Amino acid sequence: MNDIAIQEGRWAPVSAGEYDRRTRTVSVNLTVVEEVAARFGHHAAVVIAAIVAHERVHVLSTPEALPHDEELRARAAATAASSADVVAHIDEVLAGAWT
Image (cartoon, rainbow, N blue to C red; front, side, top):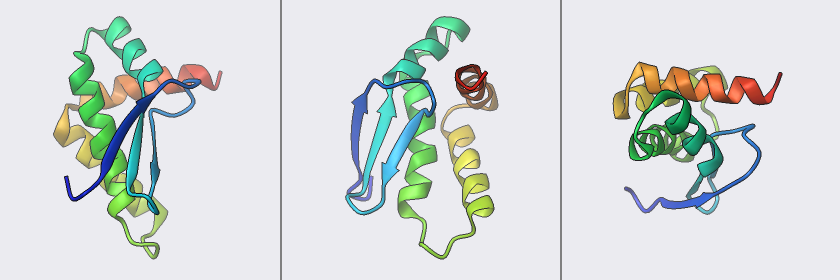
C-alpha cells in the first residue's frame, strides 16, 4: 500500500480515521467501525476499507492540494473501496457525535 502503515485504535467518534503525512500512518477508529457495523450491518472489514481508502488519499496528497478537491477525492476513494451506503453510514455515525 505504498509504504503506508495502518493502525487501529479507539477514541471518541468525532472522526473515523486520522492520517499523519509525516509518518505515512493511517489510524482507524474502531469505535466508529463497530458502531457502523452494529447499526447498519456492514462488515467491519468493509468499513475499515472505506476509512483507509479515504485517509490514504490525504496521506498521499501534496501539501499544495486544495482541501475541497482533496476531500472529494478521498470520499470517491472511500466509495470505490466500499459503497456509497457505507460512506453515508460512517457520516451518520460521525454526525451523531456532534449533536
